[in-house]
Length: 262
Image (cartoon, rainbow, N blue to C red; front, side):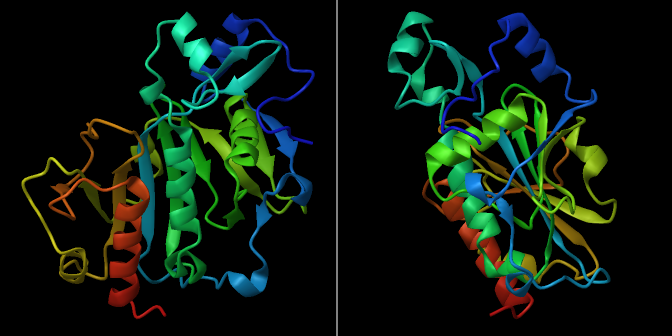
């Protein structure tokens, strides 16, 4: 069973952990996770299979703050609330460690009618440390941050998480770059408050051909902007700074209108 911040029996040397974290493409260990840790696939009645012939959506969360370290006697996912003393000791900025942003953004995507209709084809989290995590759109993540952090700690420690029935992966590390996993026939859109192109998202997506898959790249960090070279367009959805979760909500709602998803 996964504990909120730590997993017993995983005391290893720091250099070994760093080597594993850097080797995103190496063979990974598998871990079966049941409902007892609050992660499983959506009930079949709650997830309508999408039509493969229709265009879909891919989300990429960039610069996600997901980093773990040895704190005391266990490894823990670092966050700005619980590890102030650790940050002070190592002269680190607590504001740079906000895994809760990724948690909120993922819930906004996974809980949307857009996802439940089967239109979200894939979901990726790219961390600040260049680790790429694939999230199955049919996963039901823990609602609370503490349980979420336990799950992400397992993934970062090179453990794939499977559905309890063994039907497939729910979360796993995959090889960089993310572009190798994106559909060829797609329009890649980055979101940034700093963009000079301010759009009404519902009008913007309505103007894009239904033959194209849409890839939305959203920053999952507290400050700064995404800096990627694989996007086709960089837009702002508001004249005001918005949280990642709120940006995603605007995107999902606009696409639900476009495709008449209620």
